Image (cartoon, rainbow, N blue to C red; front, side, top):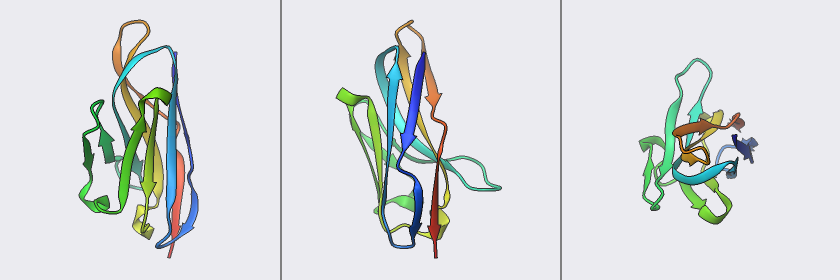
Length: 120
């Protein structure tokens, strides 16, 4: 069984920073891409940032230059450094990982979500 556990959300003023972490644990053979998604009230879930197994990154236009995704493969952990936060960044942030489990299946897994609230 595989679990993704997020941490680091909270309340911050506009212009502030937060760092999200997501650790994958369980029966994992290898992890391909890892990423962060977010869902604001009344809106669809959207991709924020993705990092491949080789370290290539992709960002939503709305966060380019402000957010940085990184990963520590030894710890099966992905991070999202969020700077210059805006009220429109307020959402529940979800971690995602596409991985090969110990049972030999390739699929994606989701964390439980962490709330990020940016006050104006």
